[in-house]
Length: 266
Length: 344
Image 1: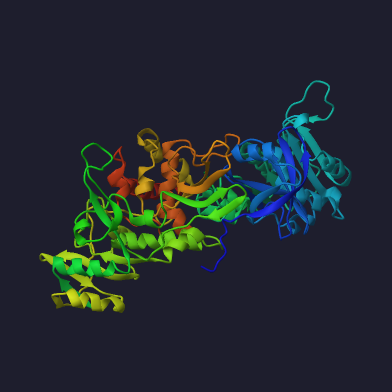
Image 2: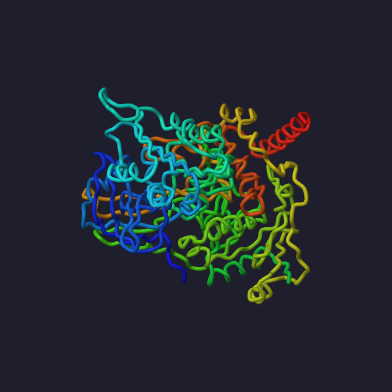
């Protein structure tokens, strides 16, 4: 047999760990190959299993960031037993990822919720460096002030582009925005929604209502992109778990144009 | 090239093949059915004609050879990862036309969906050849003629079927002709028998509008389906698996990674970390499975996944009929089409 075995993971060193919250950390992993925002790796911990984790940051030829919530068997073991300097096994990157060039020209809206910020972090970063960054509107929502991820980035983004940071709920005395991300869509100061682009990533209900809001605002279906999340065991189009209709989220996604994903019904 | 053989003659041929190949064939397992005092026909390795059941449809397909119910991929010891060994000596699988069509579906998924080939599947597949069991008549619940899978595709090395107290064999692989000639009673023109018509007929809808997803036709299955997944285990074209890591010892230092058969009908199939789940009801799962078999797979690869073997109907403990469901689907699609026409 000549072809390489794609199930064999490679070793990657943990270069740094950023602790956003108690249960959400970014693991900065050594990685030198090609990779795009929105793609994902399978984090492979022998005896515990594998979990698909999206790329939340890229330092070309040095590292990728994997922002992980401690919520399952694999992630639990990762949080419990791995520290800077340790080696983690990875497979990937898999999936299509975001084509950032689609959003760099003209007006663009990014709506991201919770860990959904991870896959679009690279997109937002790219938008923050465009010449017309003030035409880039980013709505980022977290459950509460204590659940915020990428705090340093949020400060930078607030300076560079139109950032609306909101939380679903907060203790009394909190001075920031309170409300779901969808609340801010109708009032976005857009000159021409019909030609503007949008990226929506987050929990299923949040994505559904955000897309509805954008369509009501006048966005064209084909100018909206979403990123889907499904159970996966391979990332290679074999295990079947992520299939929706004729599409495989791991191969054809996870990033889909809304004109395609609107017909992808579970 | 074709041959007429006696029972002893064909047995000699199989014994001769046994020196080079393992033979994998349907076997009647007495008393091993899923219910008390029932038999089952499933695949196993055999060494003689006596062990092979040629007069019945096998309850389970041959696919366990290519996609085992549980397959160890890696062993983990301390810091080491080792690819598990596998017995990959050459095999000849005896199967019917529908199942040979199913092989194409398995190959499609494991070798040609996406850019990567499945290394573990290919490791086995490279050593597997097929012999065709002719079907002079249809079995209960078969609908191969409706699916266009009643005539075997190319890819079999020889065929065999019972006839007039003996056996008739066509030999497609010339290198095997000598062995057959040696033990045959006579040469003959032999075309493998195939089914022309089944009692069960299925009408597959050409296009399926998304409106069908919320159609009430699926509600019946929410009530009836136990979500046990037997239909997908018996199906020769179902390929889904789940990764499963285990460790053996208290200290957790030694273990393995397996993949085990999965089913879109069973709880847990869509679970994501944090508790998310898609398709909770039997109706939703039936819809997901049925549309895959007669629409979604075709939309991706150009031909239908279902090969009409009817094993899902044979095995369902609730007597749910996949064939009847596809016909209901076709009717529902027609009705939706008429509604749309009426609106215009």
